[in-house]
Amino acid sequence: MPKLPKRIAANASKIDIDKRYTLPEAAEGVKSCATAKFDESIDLAFYLGVDPRHAEQMVRGSVSLPHGTGKDVKVIVICKSDQHIQDAKDAGAAEVGGAELAEKISGGWTDFDALVATPDMMGQVGKLGRVLGPRGLMPSPKAGTVTADVSKAVGEIRKGKIDYRVDKNANIHVPVGKASFSPEQIRENAGSVIESVMKARPSAAKGTYMKSCTLSSTMGPGFRLDINHLSTDYSGKG
Image (cartoon, rainbow, N blue to C red; front, side, top):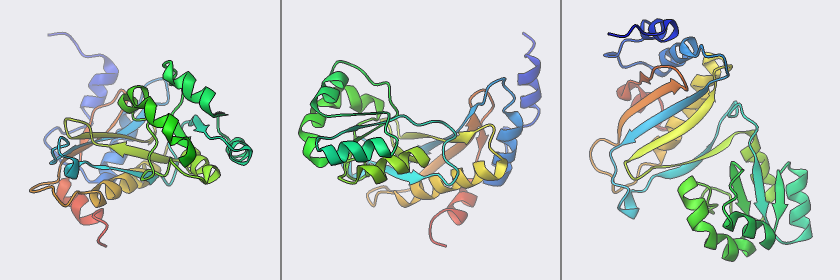
């Protein structure tokens, strides 16, 4: 049997695969296992008891992370008026434009993390679903990325507002920080996401809603969370 690399073997000794961790325990654990030579991403992975094939069971939403994502988020804005263009630039948008920017995306360009569009440009942006949809970049009013207040939208995204959406296999993957964050920062960011996903439960979903939730770093093992604990502390009911 091949011998495990020292780093992987050391991380394996830090986790009990049969245990279900509280969020504070998982935050400490994932921090201790993030030993790669780069600043690893910390992610939450959910498996939900919903059937995304039915529109009434779709789970999506947005949440502002208290400590941001730890990365420089590249936001672009598609708008038309001079005022919106100036507002977007002042808020720190990486690129701003109208029809010409939509045309650039139509050609396959997706070198950005988020797209904000004003309502009067959605006729053109809506045609970009083939490019934006599979990458989760299509703006929507519910996520706050179709808005006339482009300054606010760009500012919130750059400070740590993220969108999430369940995939066809009922999974959600969300970044909640970096390995350089403290365990407390990881815990608070992850807690905000968990509470948001809890609140986003569709009324049509029956039975167990949150089947599993795992916190991990890019190169580290996954810490499976205690669902009962999460339901008590992050249900948004108290």
